[in-house]
Structures are given as structure tokens and as C-alpha cells.
Image 1 (cartoon, each protein chain N blue to C red):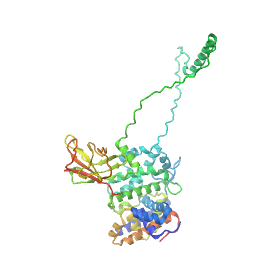
Image 2: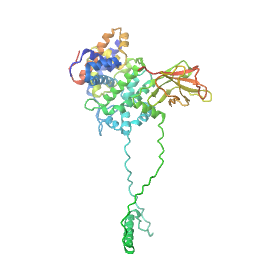
Image 3: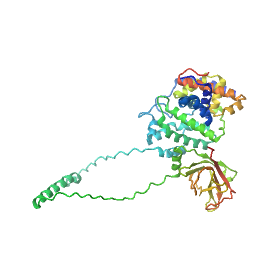
Image 4: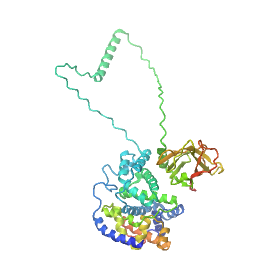
Length: 213
Length: 286
């Protein structure tokens, strides 16, 4: 597994050179960070605008579905949680602050929280997906929202063992216990790697010096 | 931003990646105080960035799921009033040569003038032929018109379920048994104890022939002998795909602990032999 991760990352680095200069164009493809005319669609959703709800599903449906498929053990479970995510989104769309983050990042946060809740309810981990299947497709496409571009940059700067743990945890959805078992590492080491890696991503995102590194 | 306590960092990382239990969340609250939510947000944003970097931009919601999501958005819609439709005036058709066409009548425009003129004439006549009237007597007449308004139709089960979800209730997933009817079944049960209302959702539950057998829901209550669960209603499954069935509890449910579905004879039974237990959903403690 470790070799596969490293091989995969060598390929990714080459793509990132391109990805870093090809950010999302100003049109509004799905998940675009561009604020549409009339204000953020999430604010219009909060006001109960039917057209905005349609637009929201059209713009963010793909992102939500991609996350749900990746982190759910079955397609049926992915469908259930996708429905829950959108209901949650309708409820808290008014909390979106365009000063803090892009709309798609807000949607991804809501989705992740709901997926975590679901997993905790299920009390079992999703089936692992081979890492090659979860390559950063956005890097291959050369279109990244700001948060994703920063995350990719941060990942690239991490020490290999930290990066591997963070990818297994955040991207594949493995629990720290499962990673410890799989990698034959003490649980404390896994947690420490995950923490340092995530702190690095967070520091780059906030533009602050890294804490606790 | 102030440096974080190492334990807070550890908990925030776990929160963003795996979630926290109640005790851990309380511990984090104690460590961070009013900075809890802002700090949780920064870690969640970092994970969201990772998520987006690994998201397939060509991914699309399946059409049936998209439809369902839009249907479930109904409780959150506030319809704007439709703008009054202003139809352009119809252009008069051109008269045929040699045909005398009367001027277009404008009854609506002329009506106020006709009424005003009639009133004036009537007033003049009244003044002319009658003595000055007595001081006017004010008579108040109240007319109450009772127009029966039909009550709005109850929402469809799927929509009603979405409304319960919107109130923050968490569905409980079904667990299957070895019964053949349970194979590959997925879904959940959603119950609002305060409203005594709930819905079951199934995907893959075998269609039944109601002349031979029916499904019956049982609700186990903490305050009631487990041998006598509350009858949650008899139902049929006659459709493919996802089915949403309302729960019709025959008694008040006070503290549900378990929802179970059995297969029974048509019409259901008062006491189940539980020979064919198909699905069960255990209510999480607390």
C-alpha cells in the first residue's frame, strides 16, 4: 500500500505543476467558487427560492455525490446520506459566510459532517477503496477551487508518512484504529501524524504560521 | 490566532476526521470555551479542502436521486407570489373592405360614467319631487358569509418524512434478519415521539400478495411488557424501488426502544408469533 501511495504521489506532483497555474475559469461549472449574479446561491436558498434550490442541486450535486460514493459502503447508503446532506444544507444555508470560504467548500463541510455522523451511527467503517481509484481527479482536470488547491499544495509539502496517514484517514475514510492496524503502527503515532498533517493544511488555508508542528 | 492546547489540537483533528463522542465534545468545549465553533470550523475547512481536491468533477447525481432531493426540499420553499400576468391588448382584426364595422364598444370604460350620470339624474329627481329627507339613520348590517374551506390535503408520506427530517430527527437504519424477504433490504425508520408520527422507508423489500400475507410493524416501548409491543400497522409493498410507509401506531408510544417488522396473515394479528421477523431497528440509547 505504501508503495502504491508513493507511486501515485509522484504522478500527482507532475500534474500539480499544471494544476497550480490552471485554476477554475470564470465561467460557473459545477462547484464553481464564482459568486453568481444575485448573490451567493446559498443565501437565496435560505430565503426559500425554488430556483436557487434547483441551482444548488445542479451546482453542488456532483461534489456531494462524489463524496458520498467515496465514503459510503454501498450505493444505497450513499443515496441516503446525499439526501440528508441536502436537507441539512437547506436548513443551514443562511449560515454561509462568503468572506470565510467558497460556497463549494461550505457544502463540502456540511457533507463531511453528515458523513461522519452517519458513520458513527453505523458504527462500522466504510469499505476501503483502492487509493488509485481516488486520485485527485481535480488535479488531472486542472480545475481547483481555492481551498482544494491549498490542500493539494499542503499535501505535497508533507512528510510522506504524514501524507499517507492523512490520505488514508480523510480521503479513504479509514479510522485511526484501522490505519494503525493496517500500517502496523502504534495508534498514538497515527494520531500524531494525522494531527500534524491536518495542522499543516489548516495553517496554509488560514495563512498562519503552523501550530504544534 | 492563538496557539492551541495540544489536547485541543488532538480533539479538533479527531473531530474533523472521525467525529467526537459527547464526552470528548464536552472536553473540547471546556478547553476552548467560546472559541469552540470557530476552531472546529478551521479544521473542518482543512478537511473540506482535501475532500474537494479528491472530488471527481465529472460526478453527477443520479437522476432519480436528484428528483427525490428536490421533492424533499418542498418544506423549505417559500413561494414568491406569482407576478400578475399582463396580457397585451388584442389587436383588433382589420375590417374587410366594404363591410361596415361598428366602433368597438368600450363597456367597461364607459360604465363609471353611466353610473355617475344615473346617480346625478336620480339625485336631481329626488330633490325635485320629494321634501327634504329626514336626518339619515345609520343602519349597520353585518353579513357573515360562511364559505367552507376544505382542509389542505395531508402531505404525501415522502414529503411528510422530509418534514420530520427537516426538524432534525435522525432516521434509524433497518437491520435485516435471515428471513428471505429481508435479503438486500435497506432503509430506515423515522419516528417523532412528540407528534406520534413516523415513516418507514424501504428499498428492496419484497412485494407481498395482500391476499396471502402482509407486513406488520411492532413498536417496543420501554414502559411496556416486551411481549406486548404496540401494533404499528399493517402494510403492503407493491412497488419496486424506494417505498415510504406511514406508521399508524394503535396506542400511544412513550419511549420506543425497537421497531420490528413481521410477516403476518392478511389483516395482521393482535399478538405476533414472530415466526417471520423480517427487519428490526433499535433506537440508540439516550
